[in-house]
Amino acid sequence: MSTQPATQPAQPPANTASPVADPAPSATTLAQSATQSAPTLPPATLPPPKASGSPSTPISVELEMSRWPALGDEVEVRLTVQSIEPATNIDATIIAPEGVEVTAGALAMKGDVGPNQPLVLTATLRFTTAADITIIGRALHTLANGDIWGDQAVLYLTIAAPGAPPNLTVTPPLAVPSP
Picture (tube, rainbow, N blue to C red):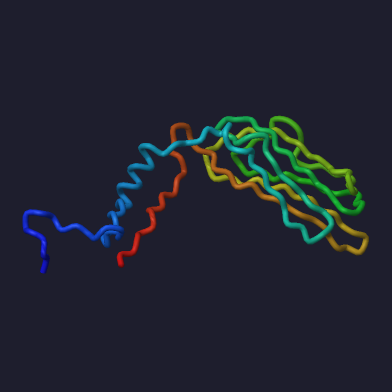
């Protein structure tokens, strides 16, 4: 039973936290808040897409774009192939799905690489379809005994339709356990 008069609200002792945590907002409230006020970063503020393989052979690749693409954009894609030992006749390929057109450059070439002598394949791509897109950069080298050295890197992109909301995953805040 409280010793304080009924007209005064009970107060916790000094220097102790209230045992009741602030209520967490509902998932609906968070989703509405995210779609109404979520800042969307302009593509120019994000670093360009870049991926590297994880080679188990002397050959390694890096696939990068000049910037993030939007629907209708033309963007340069570069595949850089390197090797820690000399390798001749390497097949370098950029694989693009339907909805992506090549407007300049090529998607495949053969060449030689060695230490400090990379092979660079460059193409300009136009993104004509709003979709989730996978761009693959691959390098393969067949040895005299039939073994194949190689590596690949993959870029996963979402090309959104104009006016489409940002692709957000709303995560509610962690609940604070009560004592």
